[in-house]
Amino acid sequence: MPIFTKEIDAKEQLKDSYGGLAKAYSTMGDFKNAYTYDTLFRSIKDTLYNTNNDKKLQQLQFNFDIGKKEAEIDLLTADQALKAATIQRQRIVNYAAAITGFLLILVIVGFYNRYKYVRKTNKIIKDERDRSKELLLNILPEETARELETNGYAKTRFYDNVTVLFTDFKGFSTIAGKLTPIQLVAELNEYFMAFDEIIGKYNLEKIKTIGDAYMCAGGIPTENNTHPLNTVKAALAMQDYMVKRQREQQLKNVTSWELRIGIHTGPVVAGVVGKKKYAYDIWGNTVNIASRMESNGEPGKVNISATTYHLISDHYQCLHRGKISAKNIGEVDMYFVESKVQASITQP
Image (cartoon, rainbow, N blue to C red; front, top):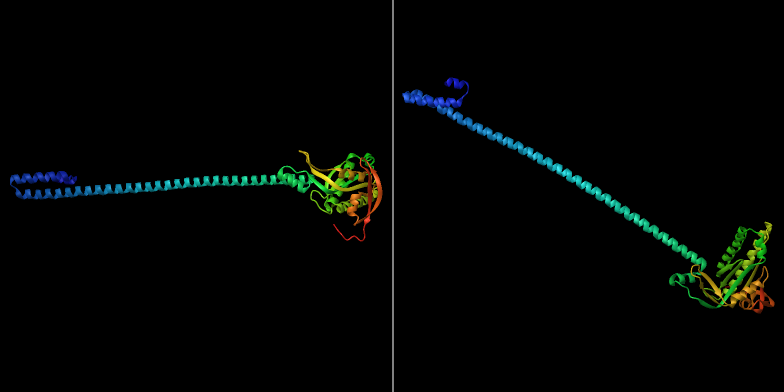
């Protein structure tokens, strides 16, 4: 039995066999064999004990290794999860940064477009304001336009000394009948633009045009002491322009225009009339007399009243025409301005 159990490595059975034989021999009084089998019993018992301990240790080691591996796997899994979470968090941060950047760009673009819009709008407003101001200055004197722009109205003013100039083309109706409307307006515009330039040079204020008549005045809206002389100089410059223009027309074999000019100095009332279309105008007997000076003048001449003559006689030689009857006014002394006084020293 022991041999068989040895062969199959049945140590537990051997232990039982050795223990049973040891007891049997001890009972039989065969202490030698009893001792032998008892020794074998104890030996295999120790072997089995050590084996069990080894197994336990192996099991413990196995369990430890398994636990270690599981820990490593858990640690690896945790590390991978941490990495995955970090990557996910970084992606979220990147997405948030991208969205924030995009929104910031939208805000910047919005502000920039708003800035461009406001700037463009302000420029349009400024351009319109400048254009309105320019148009207003084309209609009204600068001083009056500023007063109207600031206060919303312009006060009517009285001037005790203003020189008024009227022009009129001789035979305008006959000339108009020979030209087309477009040609007529274009030709008239050429003359009036030249007159505008001349009176600007001599600090006169254009009042208005009525048909072929042109009206301006000196000494308004800003008062000065040189307006009688400046107005006469402007009138002579206009006649010089007419002479130059007549020569050009003759070369073209075109009927030339002739101009009458009348001037008078005296008091006037000046102000702005109208609401939708402003007009700066002057009123008073001075205006009527200046108009009569023009209508009683001659083409190519500058006809002035006695009042104006006394104010410019130190500078210009004039031809006294005597008393001439003026419509609705009566007889009035009139003078043709001839030439400068050679000894004249005073300049405006």
